[in-house]
Image (cartoon, rainbow, N blue to C red; front, side):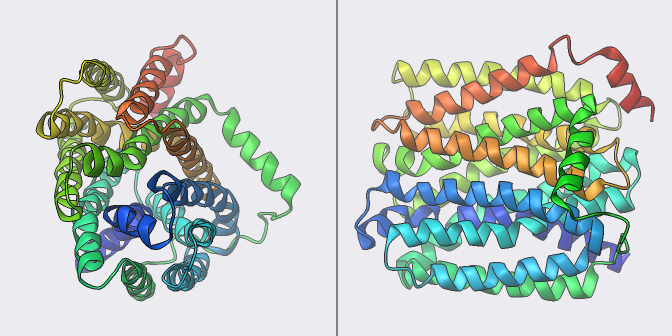
Length: 400
């Protein structure tokens, strides 16, 4: 039991590497922009580069996890993460920060892929969505504590020490992987690492309709989340005049909505199928997104009102992400690492595009952020109710 608890915590923390790497330095955006003599919207491109790095990195490390097992690629990736975090702490220009954040993502992304692959290795299909919801609980703590930690470090010691702290996080994770993570899949020399073979394997994964539909739904959920992440520092600290510390608390409050949703989802899964939950919750999130657009256009929200509706929006996100991911990964066993990598790649590519568009269309209002969230929710909802999501496919997943 103790070993299993350690395993779940380790998997959850590996999943949380990416959001922790994002959320910890968000409160320091204004200080970073001043220190590096760049506009805050340009500093936000360091988010976009991180998302691109995670997307491409997952596509690369998925086959490595299938070929060499889970632990060895994890240790190497986390070591790269530690070195990149130290480099981020010493940059002298925003361009270097953007570039090295890309490397930080390449090292940290292996945690995302490996954690989902290990879940697929060790747990039954009936357990997967529940386990992923538990991992989301651990991952969801990150947006609560990370901005608060980052804001405190920035105010007391300076923003560069935030990346020193991330380096310590990476070292801690290496120790936990060595201590608690079993080798859930031995090395498989039959899996080729030739680019043509890898592309064929990915093409095979994409041809599975259950995967292609639900991976896009999960990706669009990431798009809505990262639109919020990219736009919220400006919206709350500039438009609503929150301090770094206050923004950290506000960000953490909204993250509680996501945690609450993911844990209610665990209990709902005892009585309902993932696909049914997805459809219902996506409809409610879409309605919330429309209210968010209306309130922003009509200038109805103060800081408290905006926080409240964001809390509701992220509450629904806590249902959508684990159910979409579990349904997408279910059809695969031998290529669970590649399927997990492709799922993560799709999620982060859409997230990178969403965050980049929010920065590109920055116009000193909250509209770029809320429009990005609304578009993602709309596309995800209508994808789930589209005729292409046939009853036959749903029955195939539910009955397996």
